[in-house]
Length: 266
Image (cartoon, rainbow, N blue to C red; front, side, top):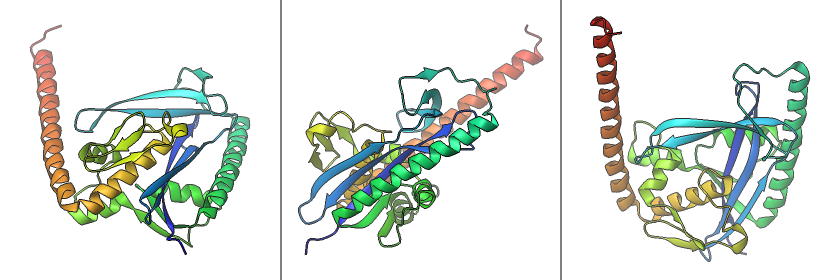
């Protein structure tokens, strides 16, 4: 009997527009399947469609992976090209809330069917990076995970390296040297071929792209743990130095503004 596959799973979520993030909906799922017997990969993914407006945030990162800004866009989940400006004053009406609940139920049904089809692939382990949101989504979609071994890479790394706070996937991707070419995903020590049909959809912050990043983070940390630990520690020193420099700059700018106000400069 062949060895069970490991499924690296990422889901992307968006807030229902007008609910101020109180109502969330899955917008896509991406999966990388790893065969331990052959060290081969296969890919699966699905965008979810529903006639509902959502708001999606995109983080802007600096060169050490720290979020320095965020951008937001509003679009229709069934027709992503149908966008509109964000208005913080907009609140969903009761009829709109009913429509949103219907949309969420429809997406949950799509998610359940996707996972049922995936389950035919002889999967033994489900791997996540900060798995809480995915596990909540699975429960809401009535997707059972109790028959699988489940892992959370973010928690495993934090425990192994004894980190004071969790480290993000963006930062771990920097640490392992994650990169994408037209035909491969790669890291410092590893490279895997991308099937032609996925060569233009594997990107960071897309579900299947983040599943690929998770896979390589896991492989690098598992196979090259000594090097990975050293790289994480070096990165944290750079990150903390950058954070302290930003704090000092903010304090100096606030002090300059206060001095101007005290001196009566108009």
